[in-house]
Length: 125
Image (cartoon, rainbow, N blue to C red; front, top):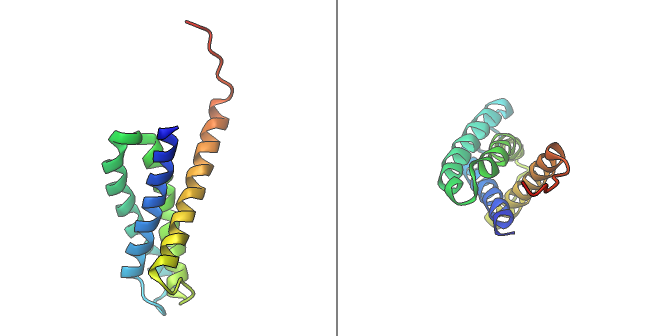
């Protein structure tokens, strides 16, 4: 149970930090394609740094797989939103959106991982 909580906290942290990194780099009115490339790059850097820092505590797969999706796609989504000027008006609302996106991605990756593993039976060996 503690590892699951750690997975979600790691994903939420990556989402929040990606949102803030994108807000620092992307200005309203910026070309959307350029903004998305900048956002994707910022998100990937954030996820690699945070992922390597948290991997010893909750596991490499559990931090890097959801983190890569959160960083890359979240970075592009947040950059697109911010370049259109449709982003969150306060830092708190941006953090909530980033954290929610991180939690949703972690839930999706954990669910997909569970589907791939299927039913596990303990044979006692």
